[in-house]
Length: 344
Image (cartoon, rainbow, N blue to C red):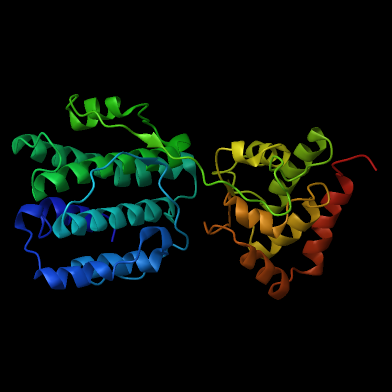
């Protein structure tokens, strides 16, 4: 899908001034079939967009839906036609964000992000934002909801700007150019300093860890930091434990030793396959007793070697169906036995 819907809204058959709605009752039926975004998985978002555009899109490789980091106050739709565009833009933005952060060609932040994200994604969004803003200026649309075209162009431009900052936030460690504010973006990308919208960084969903009551959430690390650091570094060296292009060992150690996981800002990407990962996590549980499959699931922080958000079911199924070899177990056991994280 990529940028197809965005281009259609600005340059193609979905331009709002060309929009010819179906008969009112038909449009109502069409909109009623759209599933609320908060309940959607990737396949259902594609289904929503297909219903709205009457186009068929191929199956996506996106396996988990993450919410964009930034949002901005947007106008409420006021009739069936504006509701149609609001739903279309919201679905397209959410899907594009998840397609982008799941880009399979990003192996190294340093080598791949500047082109895959900086050029192919962010630059394209910036160009579309500028074109939408130029259309607003050319048509002298000052307000946001006097007519359908005015509503759509403002809603579209502002949604794209929030999308830009959400993607930038996810990959900022690998980007060559990062904007600190929306004003900077307006100056250099829109070339219009009069555009001033409020960007709000969304709070991470509250983490509800199992069996922790009302205390601060942690994985309950018990041991010595220096010994844990040495252990994690050895696991990375010998077992490819972490995807170090996306997660440095120090970041994982910070999470394990944190007294409040909700204060942790970021994600953890593993580098080894899941069956090996399961065995390593079970060994780590000896010094981090709350590093359970359930708590890993609920934290929504951990990603597998193929970029999938790790759920309890994935770990449990891997443990039961994909046992690692005796040789691999012995090698991992040897690392843990020779590098205990606490004094015996």
